Image 1 (cartoon, one colour):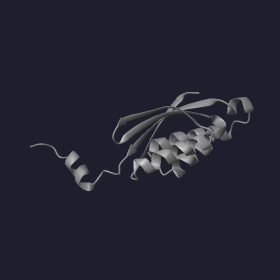
Image 2 (cartoon, rainbow, N blue to C red; image 1 turned 60 degrees about the vertical axis):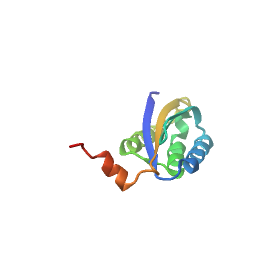
Image 3 (cartoon, rainbow, N blue to C red; image 1 turned 180 degrees about the horizontal axis):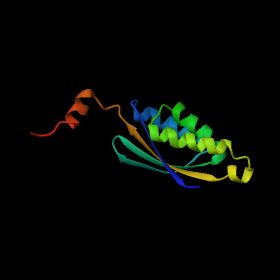
Image 4 (cartoon, rainbow, N blue to C red; image 1 turned 90 degrees about the vertical axis):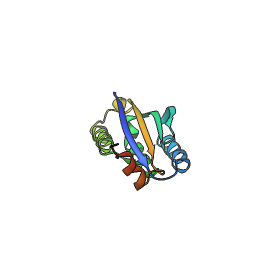
Length: 121
């Protein structure tokens, strides 16, 4: 299977969301291969999960408090649809590799958004 890229974000505190997300990923059978802090508000996780557990993974991500981007929802929905139509146990055992970027936006305020969009005169 190919590698997937998904993006999510949360307005909640990173110290609350990240541990819950890691537990949720492990509970649905996912393996976290790598975890990188790219900056103060962005974390990247590389994980693997068997195709048979993709629906549980999707639910775990959302239940952990992450909001997913539209394209990420579509990617995971497509994979869930594929999983539903596969009945062969060998195919269900395929491992899916996912790169997930999680942005923590608890520091984002209306003022910071407006300042970021300001063009110098």
